[in-house]
Amino acid sequence: MHIGTGQFEGKKIKDSHDGIPLSTRTLTIKESIFEIIGIRIQESAVLDINDRNGMYGIEAISKGAAVVQFLNIHNEEKNIIKENLKMVELNPADFVINEKPEKFFSKKTDFRFDVIFFRAVDNHCLLLLDRVLAMQTSNGITVLFYPQNKECQFTGAPDGYQVIDTRDVETERVVVLLKEK
Image (tube, rainbow, N blue to C red):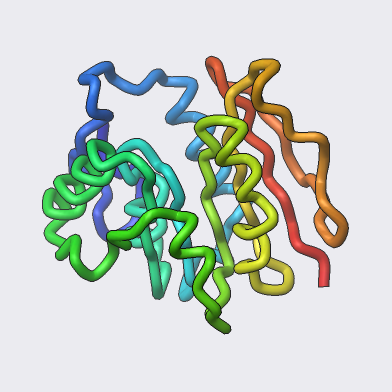
């Protein structure tokens, strides 16, 4: 896999920890999501949660995001993200949060993110959605990925949010939420 555009265009990064290449459909969805986000990504603050290999956050950095932070519950995936950051010549210590999401979200902070990529790997993670959305700026975008199964259900946009796009890719559903002012 490689970075599609921006300052890291063409640089290769690892697909995932299991060695299975990402499908063309997955990469097409990534491109579509960045088209929806558009120029908002420039100078934005981005939080990338549970990304398997960091492709969304690294693409955001490549496209001009000012701040990008990676948060992941799985150490193996966190290590892949660190390797991929090194592959594009960035210091992982500047980007990777080394604590569990529950601890990160329990901290009181006034810092808000313009763009959030959130992969809910199971229903437990989906229960964190309210805490994730509490870190969103006004008019911000959250891209929610969750498994399409009976155990993990997203029941619709919370108050103050609008669903602006929904797509299915392989075994996941992708929902793009816009926070209303």
